Length: 400
Image 1 (cartoon, rainbow, N blue to C red):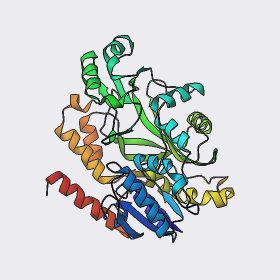
Image 2: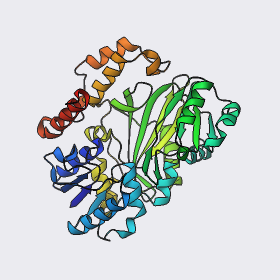
Image 3: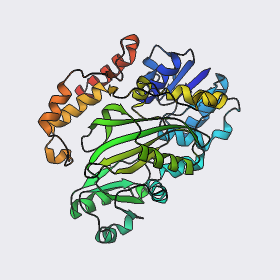
């Protein structure tokens, strides 16, 4: 099959390229520059540059439709939130023979709205952190006075990607330790970022439950635990380990995705409270996740399952057990984390209460190898992406 991936500089795009390219599919990789992480793989058949989906979404969409027709693409896989939203919005304009295995536009937007996801979680009996919704920029002060939450407070715009007249606004999670800091950070947000959800911080371990759904039916699942995150206060995982899917987490996650009549892949992000072991819902991501390579290494080949389930869904009705205890390390992400520990104060790092301490964290990063560990990008059988990422990291950090 001819398979086109957007956002070639994402680590998930590399994982998909390696998975499907190694099975004989022809992989076409697009990004805003012709060269990218995924296009550096020996499994990339053709790479290309397209207009920026963030700065010129109309040109991006038109280019994509034309390219899919010209190259007779069989499967189109948007790899990041912006591309997913644009492809979903214009899916009827793509050729009928091109499969786009993503959720409905309604389900994508419902999952992208963090406030809506919290309401869905409550409706199925799932734990959610203490929360308060601020509807608009104009109601900041009154909301702070009446929210009744304990500090530290987590600040979450309800949408990670927001379309504006000047392109896309990218939001991210922040933390506030007191009233004054909360007020300052809320006022610094773009008014379009509202509504914003305030949440009490859950101290514990980040975890993810990962799924592939075929028209509302779960056909594959996987779970991992985050061993190290960048930044350490909570962020992208740089070391993670495959685990069994917790039965309670699985029950609620599947209830959520079934309510959304999900189709395609999804990540349900959770935080396990260290005090009582409760699993708290953080968010749902409706696309391939950054740590996808771990699932593949452990035995759950989500890309292969996704592109084949429409024609051969019965193959995946009974998922084979995957390997538990497999670790995946994103080397340059781990180096970034090391630099944070070395160069920033503990206060600015905003370390959680259960953190093992700066010195112990540094020593764990400096340990070159642990049992059952794979390097996410570095593969001797496909060295190109490692060289590409290494050059890019050096240029970025040393301004070469």
